[in-house]
Length: 162
Length: 312
Image (tube, rainbow over all chains, first blue to last red):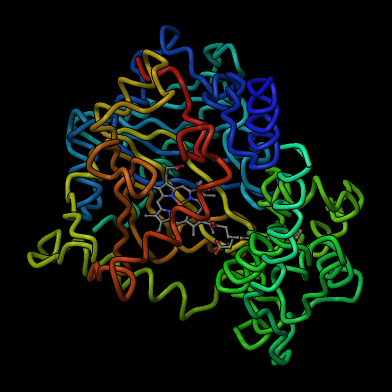
């Protein structure tokens, strides 16, 4: 006679206290929509360290500049010119609202991944671009636009991280 | 009289008896009510003021012990955390910050307290009311371009950072004893956030254990030893409308150890502010702030960030 009462009381308590554990949806735990299919790229930029991030509110995109060790060391030392062998990668995502925090935006889908590989003469650094969620290699017929992108990437300063 | 009859009488007397045990709950004067338009205040008044203000007015069924004792306890705790009758004396940005936290606690289903909502269904914030609060806060309205002082401050910080030894050789541990981890900047990136609510940009980095947990999808719970660093910079617009990180504001850590940090939700919390990396807070209790704001994501092991996958 007593047992069902306890069970009922306990379940009521659990209901009211609201402390029961819900298993979150996969999309609450992992941002797979923002994943970069690294197999389509010469390097996986996520293996590298962050140099700086940026936001384009008009296009609603956000991007992060990553660099290999040589590039990161140089950027964080405040040098103007990257040494031979530096590789930089700018990943741009569309933004989406953060489902966990009203007032925040987080990476949505990959829009482009750009690479700059620095040679002996940094003004001749190679620029490559992969576009869209499936990261199709872009044909860069407009060489002027390509060098403008390259210079813009090479010109970014590292964020201060004491 | 049979046993059941006696029991009923004893219970009845006890019930009447405990009504005499009445912890005091009075309404101190309203000194500085939150500054917000009437439609916003009205929603807070309806759903939150019974606990988070000096204008508590309990319906008769809340005045019956023992539920009265619980309510009194809730009201006292709630007022200590957030009091809409006194918050008006804080700077506007701090009041806005409190409203953002309020909206987020509502959105994640944590406020009003679920136990209270069951008994007072009309205190539930409706989707329409939530939209009113969000429209008022409007986090991503365009901000004016950075002024010359702001830009100069970034340049100075960058210059000092690149020319001096980093980290400053004497970084003090956080007030709860957690040591600064200068290598955080070499951890991999888990995500980035654009925060319109407080005009900051953030990068969230994870140590090897955290990254491995993401790769193998073992984050329920996060393994001991996993650590996150979150770095916040000012969010500055340039004259073309593009947004860049401004001054470095702070770096904070969450370090998982379910045994060592059992009293703070299984995580060690620490924050250092400014390029001189000054430990945050006045006492070791600063962690209470961290835990209560991360509480709505307890089902995600207290982690807000949704890590970008593909780290392999």
